[in-house]
Length: 359
Image 1 (cartoon, rainbow, N blue to C red):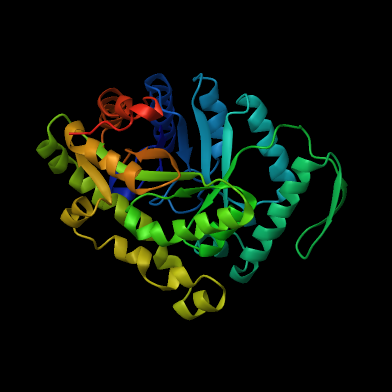
Image 2: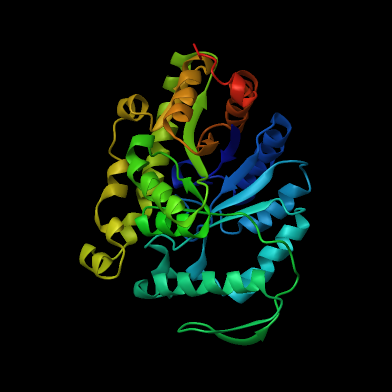
């Protein structure tokens, strides 16, 4: 089993830091994760909503982090394709691949409904722009020179430079369409944080069935919120404020979305459902009891890791979210360290030895 680190980079007003300080701390966390043996570092691409994230340029972050690390790989979850000119983005991605010694993996998504008005892109264009951008990227990887004629992009004899190997691709999100597409294309899927396994089980079945239909092997990354301390009771007391803020931050941009009628009519029905807003109303005790987040001592968390492995066939990685706005930087490092020393080794033995019982 592989383990990664996932960071959202929230910076809400009540805990706001200088943006440069946020990036400095994230780079230090990546360096530590590399030394501690984590396989991947993951963040997202997100613009304009500081309480949600200030991670606007993951490729720049990864290019910097690669100079400080040796083994850890970098994965974006997800690049919002409709915001990009795909011919330009293909070259930028290739450059980052070369700078990082081909340590980049990518997930592609259509993006949150709230980003498109600020990008001057009509909501109804988002799916078409996503599809055309993906087709162009595939042409750029498979052909040294290509042309494309679509509704949004028309190019003749484009040669994307520099050239770099095609990265491993993932997707995720809230739409069954994404999971069907991943199975069709042979991509992996990444389950975003603060969703217990039982909440996403139906979409994972859609993915597995699509993989089976198209002859591909499933590859599932599960992102799990976590906070560790040697003392479980102290961990639960310390983490409450910051985990509740994380949930509120994920729901915060919904206030800037169009009406529900507009969202439904323009193919963003999930955002009209109220599901995101409901995350901010879940009591802390429920978040713990239902495994939205794992909080406690390493001994208390070991069986939870085993349960995810046992109950999620085709799981290849658990990526840990342990950075919360307002939480001291050293406590994030402590969670990474405790997990890497006291939990991770139990699940990285040879396959035939994984029958051990975690107590």
